[in-house]
Length: 380
Ligand SMILES: NC(=O)C1=CN([C@@H]2O[C@H](COP(=O)(O)OP(=O)(O)OC[C@H]3O[C@@H](n4cnc5c(N)ncnc54)[C@H](O)[C@@H]3O)[C@@H](O)[C@H]2O)C=CC1
Ligand SMILES: N[C@@H](CCC(=O)N[C@@H](CSC=O)C(=O)NCC(=O)O)C(=O)O
Ligand SMILES: [Zn+2]
Ligand SMILES: [Zn+2]
Image 1 (tube, helix red, strand yellow):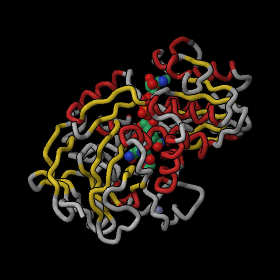
Image 2 (cartoon, protein in one colour):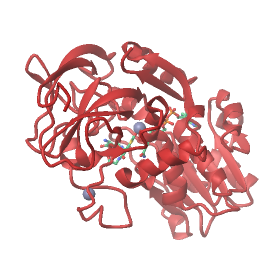
Image 3 (cartoon, helix red, strand yellow):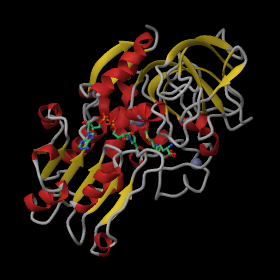
Image 4 (cartoon, helix red, strand yellow):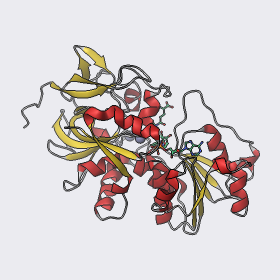
């Protein structure tokens, strides 16, 4: 039994007091886990574009003050009543997409969404008592995505935590909490790309590069990467991208450019930016009759997608994916094993490492475009 079990832990967390403002490292109180909850010592947390999206005030579910962060790894500190699947000392990855294995979503093989804790996590609280486990001088601080990993300790629902190989390096596998599974799964689970297919990937950040990696592994014959940042192109070759397009080099709409260079369009396209105009282009660059376009990017509050219905009448399919369709608790440990066997990349996505105290520099790096993933070392 740990010396902190059942007690409130006082630790550092990066608090987002209001949108569009830098995060502030504060001393927070983290209450003990209640029934069905797990308190985790976060060792490493990466920064995903979605953290910046919510901090930017673009998330209709965004609540402030909150503790952001959802791509992380750590070690179980203590568990609440009734928790049997993990125990103190286990290495874990928090999963913003829960898996209770009981709800109608979990019992369906058609989706990885889970309905059990989602109403609570969308409101920044825990399911048990609809309260936050974080506070500063008695003032509650909201949870984020059911994970809140920009804190040295966090409390998550037991259905939102995947136990992984104890040999796995936490400073690397933290990336398997979001971006890499999302990209790989968009290809393998959502689109189900077949060998020989042509693929277009819009946006060559970590998520788009993971799409390219997944498409290469699936045997795609051509993988076209589209990005306005030319510095991404050389890098993208290592992830399987075979051709590059910078939309700024073309007068015509980008969908027309792709249709013309692929004899009528690609078999599969993926939007990994979060821009609704590009989502339309991604659909319309697909081949008539069978092209499938997957929305991966997260668009800002109030944005809507549109196209001519004729695009769908003539056989194109528009889909979306959350966490790449992976059932989190069951499949994240498998992804860790794939990394350990060198079957998927992880290290290659880490362009920066920073001490937790420099978290705001991590956000600036991401906005600067030169960073794929920045891993924060929580004890520094
Ligand atoms: N559906 C899901 O489960 C998940 C969705 N996301 C979302 O996926 C998106 C990508 O995430 P990251 O790779 O972390 O972001 P990122 O910011 O690292 O990468 C985005 C890339 O898009 C490029 N880009 C921006 N505007 C463009 C334009 N108009 N045309 C072409 N390229 C453009 C940028 O230069 C950059 O290379 C975000 O919207 C994020 O919120 C992330 C994880 C999970
Ligand atoms: N809160 C937003 C939507 C945000 C969103 O779509 N999140 C993705 C994960 S993004 C990870 O980096 C997701 O999995 N969505 C499914 C879910 O259950 O949240 C809004 O309200 O529009
Ligand atoms: Zn993410
Ligand atoms: Zn469920």
